[in-house]
Image (cartoon, rainbow, N blue to C red; front, side, top):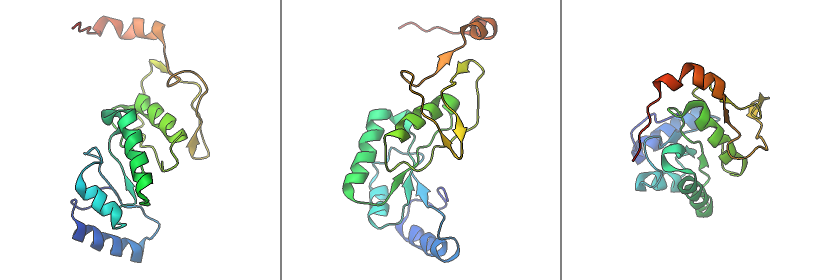
Length: 161
């Protein structure tokens, strides 16, 4: 259950009691709109009221997100990592998959299912509920330059600073 109540300890206690009674396998998650450093999330984690935290890794950046995951793991809290990824779509998902491959507390990648025909990423396959991690450099994504030239180059905007 994602962000079912406002970030309030008493509300999370009530929600957890309800969840434990009726659907104990359901995770309680929050933090999509934040960077995971807000005091309330650490209080929720400390009290065992938050099963996973989900700040937007692509807005935070990979290293700050890695540091957050490490800090949570070092705290001893059972909270797992479930990064938010909507606006970055397929390309963002590839970053999450790479992050997941090296992060033991990672639980799930949000996949917006938005696809862009210009990206080629044959090393990623979804099988049996999980993605494969390619052994190609970087994120393992190439651009179909012919398709880009044909469909998108004419509407490209270049900003030089």
